[in-house]
Image 1 (cartoon, helix red, strand yellow):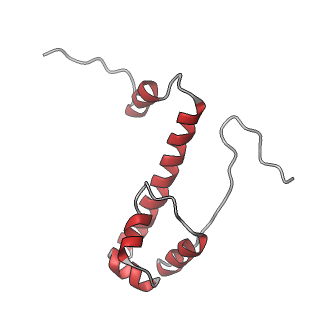
Image 2 (cartoon, rainbow, N blue to C red):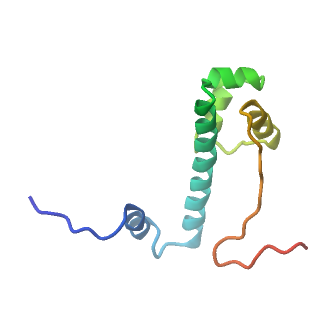
Image 3 (cartoon, rainbow, N blue to C red):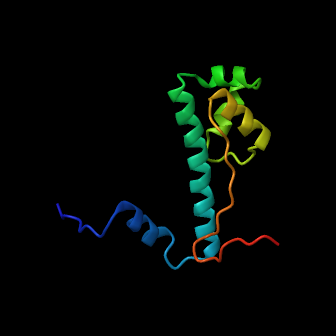
Length: 111
């Protein structure tokens, strides 16, 4: 069996395979997906750390368990600030929304 050569970290291999030399829109899409993953994963981790099931968190914020499931899913893009605030309160956390300049872009300046 041939031994595969190691060409770097997993993330660099994936970047080279799927994004290097590709249109900027594909890279932007990947960044958006990673941000969605991070938000859903963070909510799931906070919920689990609090010892709550999706159903229990849903009951605390007066919604359906299916909505919590969707919010924790990376494909969900219907996050409302109100819902995120209710989740934060139920999990004894603080919601912090910020705008950060993309890499290579100048700092965001007020209009």
